[in-house]
Length: 142
Image (cartoon, rainbow, N blue to C red):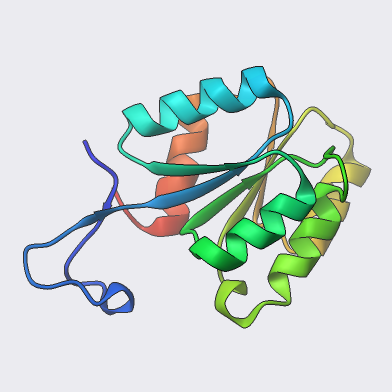
């Protein structure tokens, strides 16, 4: 099953019969986790762009206008919460789903993530089936 935007979604200006792969911005500073997630996402049909720090995340989000952002919280340069707040201030990205992927399990971190503008919170180790279910839920692709 390929993750694609269908022709009846007017946001994407597609011609009848055309589809495109959903764009995911993967923000993760751990190379091992980033490469594993990228590979799994691409195998599931997503177009994945990587960012290794919060500053890159903000820049790439603004340039690529992803369909979903997967955001780690503990990042170099600027943390995931700050990056999320900056992304949320961009008019073209206000409604973009942001799913936190983090090792921080405390209720305080979860509350801070949701308050910063994240839509969902996923703890590491990552259950990829659950993550993909969330992506589909937020993009309404089943």
